Image (cartoon, rainbow, N blue to C red):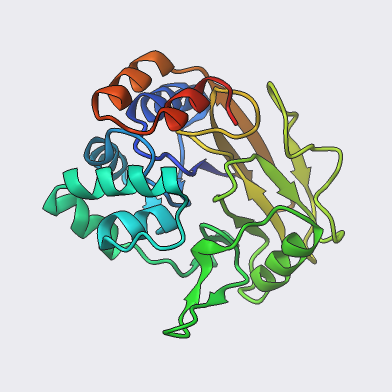
Length: 266
């Protein structure tokens, strides 16, 4: 049996990350720790979050906010996301900038475990100018995008594709739709998913650590158990000190909308 700790979309929220790591100890130990990107952006502590991620040796993929923060190119971000990315970019240490710049946006493939990691979708979208596939910009939110992502993941010869970007805990099968028995918008714990599929890949999004959008303010993460004949996917949620994060965001003069939305998880 192999046990994986899976995180995504931490977004410079140190308090939420610390709460996740403390809670995750109850379900470990882990053979691998993963982050599907967007380590920074939105929140007030980009350098501190990067330091924790590196200390715990997370295997990490580059997200669209990671790319914007280290590069200084904020195209494609909303007004509020841009303001936070500019803030993170300005306070980023040289060491943190180098870390973000080294992250790959292409899927991370572990054929030994039969899994792949990506921020947005395995169905990469070529950039208009460079022609290079940008996997971190695509959202998997419906039947069509899920089907394309699964088909693309199968090209890597893996059973499980782990992704993020939407901030919404999601489980998708090859049934051409997101499994309706596991509503992508949920409040409270979700029952584990047990997959015995060998023929087709499945998709798993653990939700967001630092800025949940499933109408619950608790930090979300995932635990994956891989056996010879089955994969067990578990969604976890843990409360964290939202007030302290909001206070730090106010101190840094981050957009009020980003501050208030942490309380409603939307």
